[in-house]
Length: 62
Image (cartoon, rainbow, N blue to C red):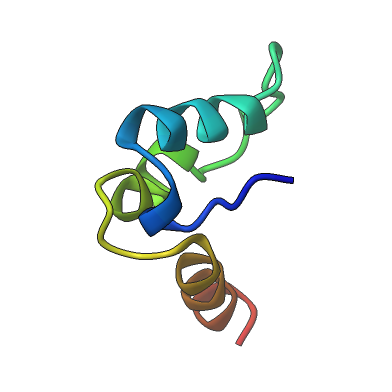
């Protein structure tokens, strides 16, 4: 499996990765989580996925 770290990916690759996580029928119509916004800092090369996930868990599962 290819690394998903910012240093090992281009912005286009990071966008493609997030697209892979969105099913064709995303089933998120009743969900308030916008994956594009949630992972915006990853796409822009500011935060790693693990950091974003940890922050999300700390906020919503605390």
